[in-house]
Length: 91
Image 1: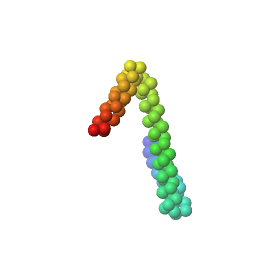
Image 2 (image 1 turned 30 degrees about the vertical axis):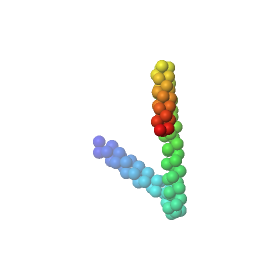
Image 3 (image 1 turned 90 degrees about the vertical axis):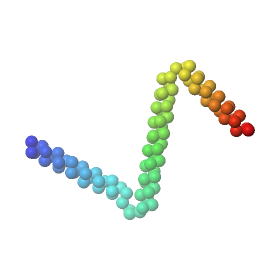
Image 4 (image 1 turned 180 degrees about the horizontal axis):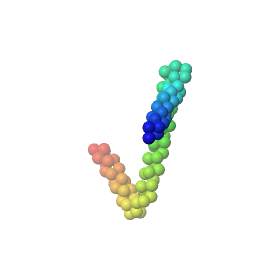
């Protein structure tokens, strides 16, 4: 039991040490703050694009599950609201 606990602790410490080193080294290779910020911005843009794609996919899946009558109703209501907004802005 003690050997197993020791090995688990050893592996856990190893993950923290090597994991932290790899993340830090990728940003501090040349020591430039601008390059690190650029890398972070690229990663955030990539994550945002993936999130947007996933949201689009889930929205499409939601509307595929809806009935034809529900789709028509939503479409008519949107059209009616758009028309009402246009007429109310005319005053």
